[in-house]
Length: 110
Length: 113
Image 1 (cartoon, chains in turn red, green):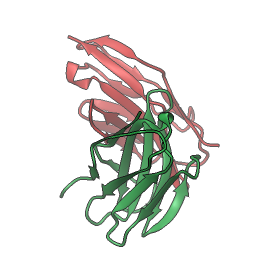
Image 2 (cartoon, one colour):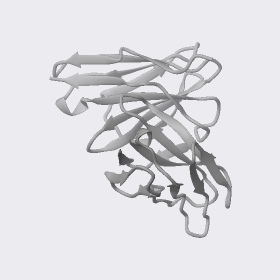
Image 3 (tube, chains in turn blue, purple):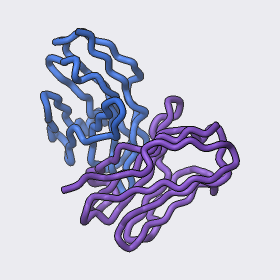
């Protein structure tokens, strides 16, 4: 069945470092793609999304581009902050359901 | 617009008991999904309700059930609790299609002793 694979964490970076969290999906067709973020003690919240090939989603300095040819939706940020420490989930929405990856925990050191 | 609310926020039960969790979606949203989140298994889909009907179901035993009311509020029930049911239970509301943006509540932390 369809699945979403994202890099396992935890990922630990220093403040102002460049961030990449890889995500690949397996759905056929053109699913919508999402990145959600979960801060400690909270539920998930949408970070960004893209609905068609070559779309770039962006929010709060984070970006991800929908790459149909590589079935990927990697999350990037040029300069991370301590406040970005959280768990990040990649997800795909296709047919009648949304599928989440296992999540990547990100630690940013001051 | 008020967000998704879940009650209670924390719950402690013992094995064999049953529990009911409640979720109130964003006003106007007709779809509610439930997820179980554990450190080992990550986020796992339980079920989705749309207009009082179960639209999708994950791979959980029959001890896990849910329902949705005419005002879109949803409840999930777990009977005969097991230690492995300890988890954060999240609900999410969606305006329409399952694949649209999901708006999550803060979750109910269930501990089974």
